[in-house]
Length: 127
Image (cartoon, rainbow, N blue to C red; front, side, top):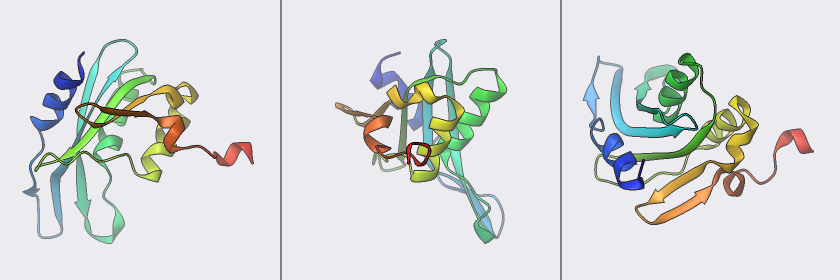
């Protein structure tokens, strides 16, 4: 899957929508491609009391549900097209789901890529 196709997959589902008085979803969307070639897409859920979660978590949960754990590349973006690096919680989840995900390519723009290992250089397990 090309970077442009992965970005398009995330763009297809991004868009903030109100779910209830306390909850909205979709202000950020993520798409990832696995070692097996499957694509998983997710949106964030913003809820009161800190119980929401990131778009990357949604996509990763779907991937794990389908029996996969190795992420080749991932992208997260907002409705206006702003690319977002995974937050610390998402970085740690990616690593703990599969230590090989340190090699995951993180798309920070159409032509800007880094690896998870660059965003998570000092892991607590190594201390």
